[in-house]
Image (cartoon, rainbow, N blue to C red; front, top):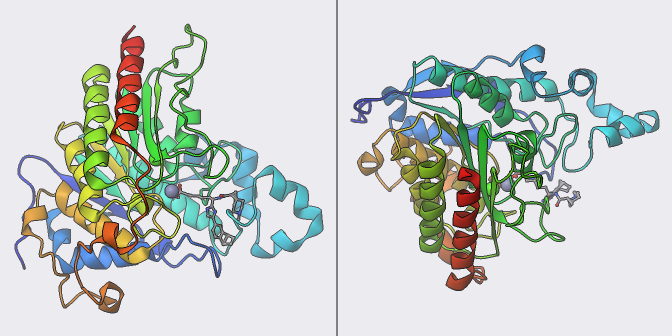
Length: 390
Ligand code: ZLS
Ligand code: CA
Ligand code: ZN
């Protein structure tokens, strides 16, 4: 086969279940599980599957999901049917669990949730059992789901479930989130503990961009004796940030966090809606810039759980996640920037058939993040880290 070798000195495990891919949120809904099919096809076309341990993810059990979620909410997800959204008597329950346009009920919803959650739980267990150093589940990363309700296309918070597994073996877990949206569900779940440091980079506009949380001064419980104080880090950004500024910011923030916090493992949410040309996003990142954050995170050599997340222009989501898979395999330099002729669904990658189209130029959004603003953010976070150390 075409020479992607296993990386030297560490193992990469790939956790997926193709039964996730055919689920449909509905006609005009931006979330398309089918992007996972496209990602997998690119990974196969490049021969990367030969260089990893491949695992068919199990469905997470009810009990596994109940380690974070309320049983009544899981019961609801298990028994609800697509037609129930139209039944007036069900209206209260739909409101209780935040079911609606963003989070609709669709065929196989419970199956979908338990499969993507099972992938992240399996991946976390591989890491703590020392059977893998980098574990990947591109179907996970659904960071908005709350204990007892759905939010922002997310129903079950697989990231929280994965971190709970890691916490059984590691004293401190660091969570990094490069989705264009704030990782509010994960932040909230670990708001009151010092055993998880959450760091989210996101577009922040309290009134006009979902979910409206994640301001720079939202750093954890306000009471100084609460152990979670200072353990939430938020990097609020404006429209149009570009590769170089984002990467420099990422390195400064994450470098300081890892040095100060010294985590036993890292969970990296790679939401691809921070790319340029995303249907919902508003940043100007290229596949290379997004991937450079993954590459930097890998340099610490700390056990790494990598999950997906948002990403609403499927051809670019699959480009980014395939490229990032190659980075995690130490094989980015062995990958042809021209997408192989043999890839399934090749038409989706035209007319350029490049793995690295100039996304930042194809729909340039004015960069509203002056260097002076970014410097202020870095200073505030470094100060926060001094408080965190005590
Ligand atoms: O981070 O902005 C909102 C909430 C609303 C506006 C949209 N309407 C439908 C509900 C009320 C204030 N929601 C966001 C959620 C973004 C979730 C991001 C998830 C993640 O990437 C992790 C996976 C939002 N933005 C855009 C839409 N919703 C949206 C766009 C288009 C449609 C179609 C289907 C549904 C209704 C029409 C919809 C939602
Ligand atoms: Ca984010
Ligand atoms: Zn998002």
